[in-house]
Length: 165
Image 1 (cartoon, rainbow, N blue to C red):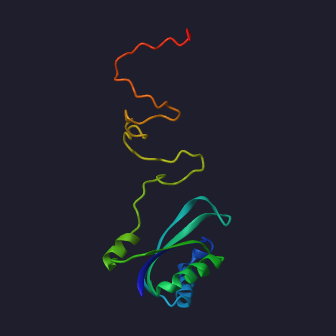
Image 2: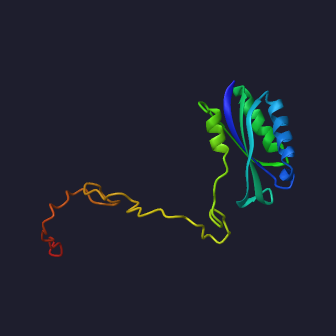
Image 3: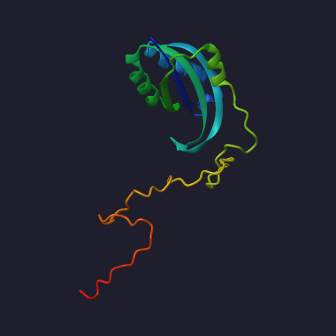
């Protein structure tokens, strides 16, 4: 059995009582022959866009052990549930109980930070100067449609007069 990390996103009306979320996760884990190692409500947040008609969702973080062949069926059962909006399952090899606690710790968020208000002006924080995103321009790189003649050496050369021909 491998160790996995799963993030479930629940409908907030269903998740009003956290016991409902626990019961739903345990039902899914029993069908997948999984063993829950760690289960914690992470947070309730406003979503960036509607999922199944919902603007908010409750995130639940779960670490569990299960046979590798059962994960696909578990994801299918979660997506068929009317109460679960989304699920993401990842391998979590090397996770210790201390790291699980740290991953599930609530984030400290200042008022208004990280919330999407729908106007497209999220607080993007201080990202600093990113410089030229295209990277340095190489002198030996040819642009599209360039001729095959060699590049000049940088000295201004006279342009040949082709009108007399």
